[in-house]
Image (cartoon, rainbow, N blue to C red; front, side):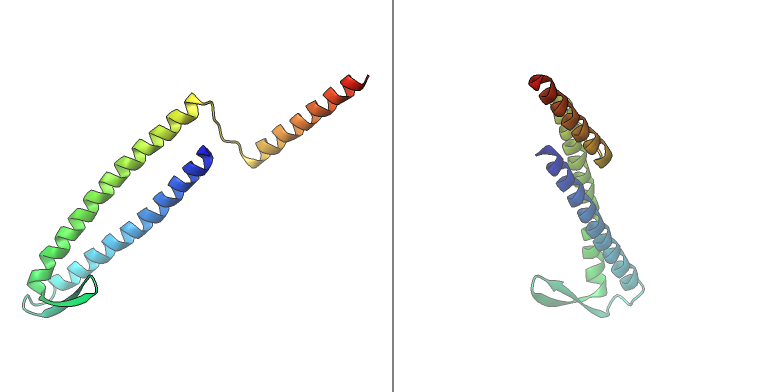
Length: 125
């Protein structure tokens, strides 16, 4: 169902965007804090399941690279999202699909019920 697909894409987009921005923000905050520390100070970084010891001067470039990669990933995912949105819109137009709100749904349903009732009354006369 195309409506479910659209809702799913929108939910994933919102969830991903929030988590992604939160992670980038966290990386930037850590980098800012480390830049205020002496370069030879020890720090630790979780790599997989292992806690690895580094010096601040070695970690800062790694974090900067991670931030740049994440921002690049964000751009790529946004482009994919736009492409998927265009694809969905083209499908909707091609197949004459439109979304109705709850009020419109009940109005259509009521009209269909009235039409069915009047057709049944005409047939019995």
